[in-house]
Amino acid sequence: MADRRDKLATAIDLRLADLWAEVFEVKPDTIDPELLGWFLVLGLRFLLFAIFIIFWIIGGIKAFGGQWYKLPIIGEFAWKTVNQ
Image (cartoon, rainbow, N blue to C red; front, side, top):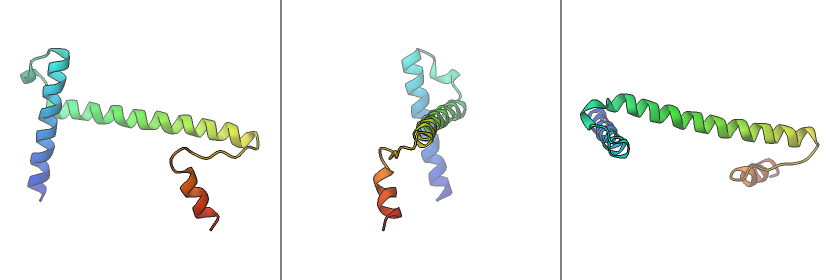
């Protein structure tokens, strides 16, 4: 099972490296797929962290003003769970 995951991860890394090379016109042989994958994951983590911070600031402002605020996706689920 671990071997299968490693093969899949390597295939995904190679596909991303090819896409990167095609977009930025770089030779695919000069790109390290592991490093590229690491940077893509790092970028995704930064994006999720930025979204979290934005919602945290909005929620803090609303709470300080005494207003109720539901998050767009999980707000209704949380409201129903608390009020059962």
